[in-house]
Length: 570
Image 1 (cartoon, rainbow, N blue to C red):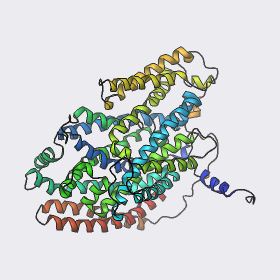
Image 2: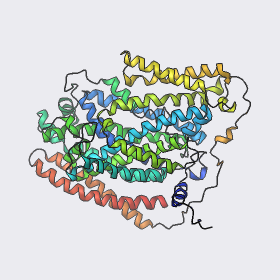
Image 3: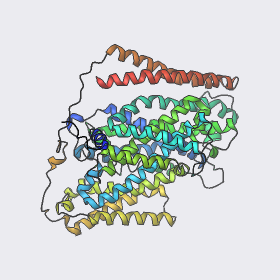
Image 4: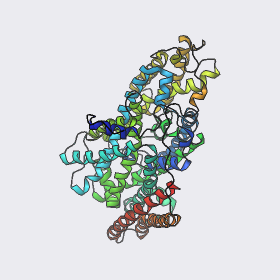
């Protein structure tokens, strides 16, 4: 049937957006489950990211020592991986729902509105920070000065942010599988850019440390201790210690793992054990990338003879890697802001029942892009990350208590919604009281912001169990929702089948894969050559390396895109 002439043009656009449906309000069906490779690529792409440039340099400015960095990050990231694996992924695999829709079943529509609005606002701010970081690289060829204040100082920078934001929003609207595919192409190359940027700075760092070369792990450790992670802050304030480094690594993605926001991703996982794929992001990104970013930042500051706090991510990457570094910052911002914006769209979509996820993601993206024009989060990223995790994580404690603990202690799952309550007041009270107690402890100087997660999380769960028992969760629910409703079977609509019949050439796939691998080899071999050659002819070697990196980068993205596209079809 043709569209009536009187129908507005917006109706056709709305129908196109609605076709991008991704089980927003129902469990994912088994035919849409994805393998481990998608999650490994998604995590690596998201967490080898633009914010790594900022966080790695911040550790240096905050005076972290070299032992604090190497051991603290190892422990903190392991705790994050375990939290994804044993808390987030299992609930997602059992329910096949987003947190936003499952929380509605537990907490009622009013609590869902409160949580999802807060969630979406914080995620939009975080995604805006990542767009700002990408824009810090795009500004370089346009001659725009670095934006290190909370407000934009150049109208051209605003135009750059709007352009970058448009790309991010478009990819986020396409959905999870497109996000994972985009990350899979970018992540191997981005990781080598971080690694190569650190390696190419080694001769200059060694010179500053009074060493002639870097020929052993001991000499590398000495360079790091003397020049990069010195344990001293520029203003003489107390340095960041081991426990704060470890705690930050754990809470950096607190809302995603302990807060269960990444149920939105793991609901597509064939197995709950795919939670271990988070290690690709934590150790390639939050471990090695933070270390490499710190070395790049210090090296760039030495080469430019400028204080570290006056450099932005684009400037650091350009000094180390040339135009390939600029592209690395842009791609890193995209691969991180895309899934963050995707989550924000899911959160808002859960409270706008007449709107598709794609449509609400578009609106959230517009808000995010406007936020990105004001780089205030960029200047206070570590504090913001700690605060947004603290505010959102208690929702995960409430869900975990009801999903796993209630059946074991004689309380009924979904008791509030089964009784027809619009608001689960025990959940809201537990959340507010625990957050209030945590902020009081932080303001009083009893606990640092990075340490508040565990007591707040445990207090939320304990209060919710107590309040729910008093409110009637121990009695028999008037209605009972069968567990089969959350086992991943489709409930609402029949989705169109995917067209996987397109032929794929094995020869082309193998050839493109070989070329991509060769290009990646050049991306790391060129910086290694500069490091081995040392200080003599350093400037000339760096200049030649940047040219080789540029050519290898172009070749990789052409061949890598062909390889991953054909592999996905097969």
